[in-house]
Length: 374
Image (cartoon, rainbow, N blue to C red):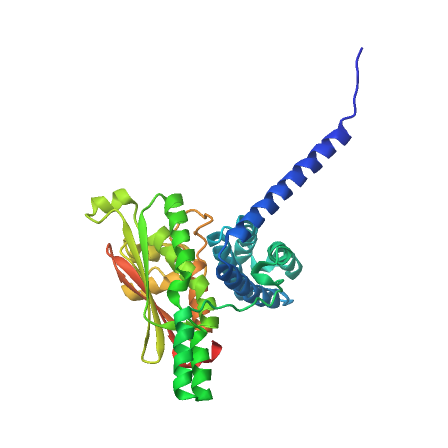
């Protein structure tokens, strides 16, 4: 006897259960991540995401999509992915990575770009961000519900408050009081140290490298500027780890300490905030940059360029010396994004390179123009 059984309904149910299980596990991972994050890091990240998404959504609403438009959207998505990856929002990072794949194809064939498709991809990122917002709201993180207008929070030392009280008692001048309160809204760069240290630990393990990060803050930054600089710093440290620093075995062969160093320093000098990111890795290989630029037709074969001019090509959209695209790098958008953000802030980004001995990226931003942003 032959028994024929229709298992269509059973398979459909199994599929639904599998999808429900994945959604549950994803939500559990998201909840666990949000609850374990430092609240100032979380809200700083969300505020930067709001800024990025506002820009990306505005650009993607254009009916005409050209290569410049795609690159602008790419920069925003890449910056968001970097922050998401650093704070272990894996689902958001994966979605952004998928959107990057789509945009990377568009960069090569801009004529096939469709604003509706781009909006749909951007909406996927927005939906995942809304999932994060819903968790923040549901568990009433930071005493009250979170809205897309992220609450601005600054950590203040009790000793600073005591100092203000003493000075106010001595002067009784309300103008001095206002000035002292404004100073409280300034943030030292090392307030982002925990985030960067965690990222270094995570990436060195993934890349099988050894590195130590130190941050020295000789000045404080306005709140808004501090938040806007978080993604550029993440990109530059990731760049050092992935491109600049050699493996422990390579470093030993060169007579270097097997543990590489990355040093971040901030100071206020000549009415500018000066932030340097220095590593003792292999430096930028100008000839390798030239080879990639030639393959991408960015320069002519007979171009007579200095080493400085060749190195400056690393900021060109789409140029990467990596042969394989990974979650960490390879698309040639990181440094382009960093430079764009710094220029938006009215600043400049320069690079000093010493082959086989390391690289220094120097950010300079006018301090007087940004102090009103505190």
